[in-house]
Image 1 (tube, rainbow, N blue to C red):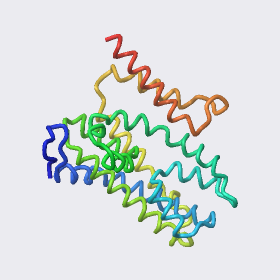
Image 2: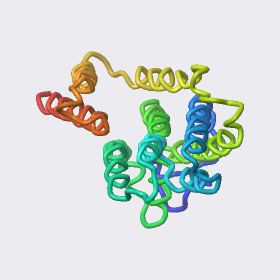
Image 3: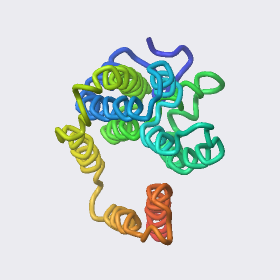
Length: 236
């Protein structure tokens, strides 16, 4: 399954795909809870099943979908929804840039397909694999496809089971997502030199909402952490 003509950093193997799938099982649990929660919320907002599943499949961005749902009314305020989605999803520019050595080798539809399944969880799985020495793009594909399928399926389930579920997040299973990211973060720790950008990014998330709107806080924190990291690397 390796790509013809590719080098060691450009292969896609069956083993890599399954590695991405296996690494994303805990992530899929949290994704299923959040997806079901979106399905419940969409039904409460009077969206149809088709519209709910269609949005989930086409957008594939949980935070942006929840943000859009808070603005959903008749007639649709398209500009506010677009701007809100832009603000919430702007963080993906930084996530994709950090995987440029993999994704940058793809062009046209391949690049678009790779970007479509980009998510924080898939990014964390990929970064963790690269930190361990993997150069198999199949890891990214396996993780991204699994999470996308779980997200769509759990949204449909949440919508149909809404009368019975209430808000599935009340069971606390979405804590798995926090634990998953904590595990991925610690696995990429390279020593005390990583402390400054991590602390800077964490502190940036505490900027008051009167200064930075909540929709932009994740992006701002990432930019602050990246800037501190670049400054640290330049000094050394």
